[in-house]
Image 1 (cartoon, helix red, strand yellow):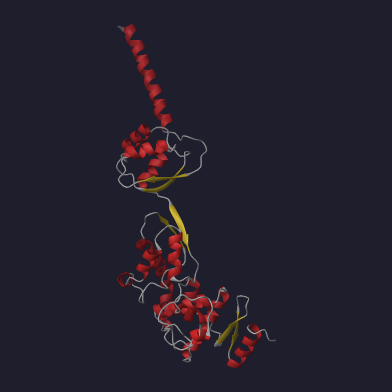
Image 2 (spheres, rainbow, N blue to C red; image 1 turned 180 degrees about the horizontal axis):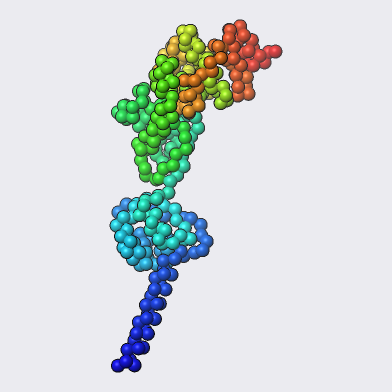
Length: 332
């Protein structure tokens, strides 16, 4: 009996060693070098389905080993749906951990200062994140505007230009809420400065949107803001082309005298005194700050483009007329 028992024990030991080696190998990364691939976990997918898909994609060696690991770690029922980026260089344990934590793939989305809500909506659609119409519907949703506690009839002006990262399927409303939340973070340190100047949030955003459209030179923003504030204090009309253009449906790029004479355009600051009824673009932090911290030394009430991205500032109309002659009509 002893002679028979010894070989059996030896065989069992060998089987256990071999089995352990097989399991250990099955739980190692399939390849020492591999490019990342996008792996999608559908909503409601079972552990078995996910494991089989991972093996089929070449991301793990054996589905049964992945299932066993997930159950042993108590994560079999906690794999989260979504889009992931995995590589065959990762071990099954690493992949399982990311699936259980829901560390999904996110996509960057950004837009520059000075775009309108309509232009931003197009960018959402081009990025494959949401339909432009859905974004614009949210921008003009008065209930959402009230819920987000911003001033105005819609969210134009409050879509903050920044780089965002979202997972696929996060939802248009959640993304719009993120944009407005980022505005509120930028607004928080400016609120007391605006109050000191007796400017409301809405007034600051409207004026900042004009500043944003009037100059691309960062150092000029406080001076441009000062000019408009000077004009408002004197009861002068703002006479800013970007505002007029915003109020022209299907603008063809050619601003004509008939546009400047059109009193039906609520954004025609050549005919209507004060600020336009709403923002004409979505300003960034620098333009917002320029309105609440304008150039204190600037006493100009006119400016004209020098055709190099900067402007000539004038204190009197006569000086302004000479600058227009020089920079716009080519007279020296």
